[in-house]
Length: 338
Length: 157
Image (cartoon, rainbow over the protein chains, first blue to last red):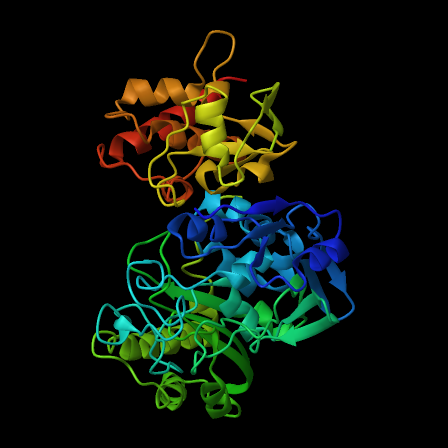
């Protein structure tokens, strides 16, 4: 691990000042990803600005939704009665990620800013355009079974690993940010970038910007929502594909919907084409399949992850069908401990 | 840097800690508590599970500075009054231990599960232990041990 200095500023303003103008500084939240990446030599900050004690751990009801502090632990977020009542999709997505030990340490902001688990990115002996711009992307012709099928570029086919971010992208969350240039909000989707020719930039955040909170606007029909994740083992694995969906059906017709996809792109992928195809359509498996196909028309799978396209289609159709069927909605709730 | 924290109810201080050290390293190498095990060092295996402010975490992923002024309880702190915790007793009785390397982490994680969910279903046990890898037992004896500990604890007021 490269030596670094460790700072524990007294408040958010001091933290931003400590990181301002120092591109080799990094904010430390729960550390469950950053400490690992530092040990692997993938992340090499010269300064760690520990924000765990100054990031808000509050979850508040605002007029229009929920305001979730950046320092709220993943486990606390998933267990919060307010979140479970108002945004069950979010609670479910968080519970589907990582293990109990990791959720007890990982924070909301850190979850959003975690890096890809692409095997080449995590191995400093291999080229990777995300870790070392210009060095190449061996994943395109190598091990890309679990990498992107949507929105990738010739420079990078990595996926964003967060489950929580997929739910937040479906729910039109707003990320509150404090930076050297002042405060601003960044909408989701929109926080995470597609790789293009700058795959080293995961997000649109400027150097030194610090996430302070995530605002989740109230969406009445999100009470009828589902996060469904397919992975290689039953627990503690990243998504092969995942679907976050909320459906508003009246008289057999889709009035409105929100759909975001995980495990398939460099960012949580808001399925705008599928949503557009569904609004006003009959709430039937045939129409759900048509919507899935509309989204997948934009996909460009690689040789060894082509299976993700039909898998995603099936998971999306099944999820929407469950949401449209009162009888189907209650089944297969995720296992959890209170 | 100096790191001061409470470990198993006692105030402890470690001096000359390098910033890159983990809480696990501080516990094992500086405070003489080798119960928590150092295995994968990336939060995958759970062998280093300890309570941090009452919640089980992977100590290998906690930077030493993050533990400053906080309260840690390790596997060494579970037994009391000269007697093993019911979870520890159940692990030994059920043969839920082979090489023993994963055991401290599993014991702490199972201890936390039974505190929050005294009568867990098998699915709840599996989910709670998903972050703890064992390469010897095949997990069946571990599940037996957690079930036995739950039964014993329920019978003890």
